[in-house]
Length: 160
Image (cartoon, rainbow, N blue to C red; front, side):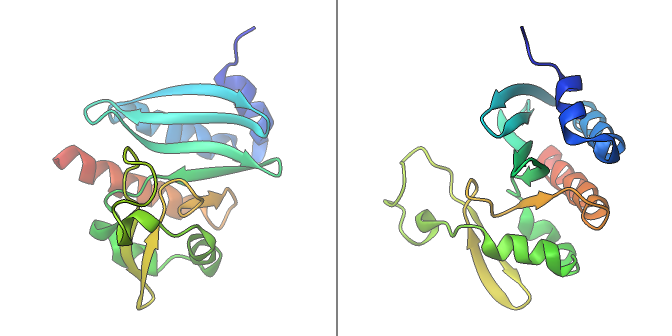
């Protein structure tokens, strides 16, 4: 029995369906493929940018709550937008793990891509790509900002 996108939508709940479908469509229209897999915590839907073959975002679950992880490779190009995010989103970034490879290139796995180096509210941040640095709970406060940042991220990737 294969896992479907509809299975994921049902798990995420009807209050998130419109946003998830909107972002899903947007990413497909902007040269991304997607794949879905089931994990112990729920489903993970990954979006891969075809030209770069790199993941741009994942929908995932933590404590049965749907979240969006953004691989913010181009955060410097929209750093000003991030500074205007609500505190709940800034707190999520600050709680995320720091990237040890940014300070020591021999730290971590040699295939590990370095994390994100940027300034948030006057403080330099060096966040890991994988340890929750840009992972946000889906709610009415975060959704508009998440869509906006995904649009900025995709524009920046299309220029490269």
